[in-house]
Length: 157
Image 1 (cartoon, rainbow, N blue to C red):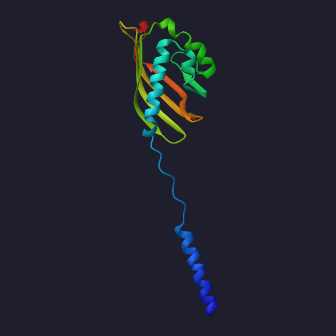
Image 2 (cartoon, rainbow, N blue to C red):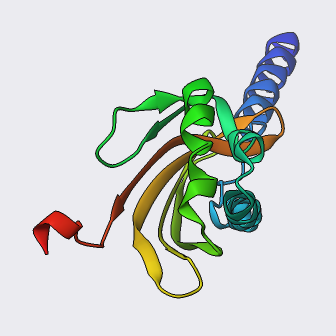
């Protein structure tokens, strides 16, 4: 009987310890922790855009990126380099991306914001954008990028 009581005590003790050693839930992901990195990447984008540095712009995009420009077909990272070569013809002096919101999880972040570009005499274009960011190695890079202009086309004015 004594052996049974000892065995029962050990079983209860092991069961109790097993119940109390449940794995801890991972810390909740805070999307705002990525916001500074996104703002810094946007500043690099602004600088490269004004310089007409298509390689610098393409480097900020994920290897599997797609962009969805207004009034054009979507294109991947390789195709966007050709499109970005047209930037110097725009004679822009300023490009500014302004992050409004950042949300998401540890795998993908969604950024919403607005942009404005000018040629030093007038605003050439302004509008809104949505970017899905995804890790590429150890850096967050633009994975999906879509934007639309708030400026009415000349044909509609």
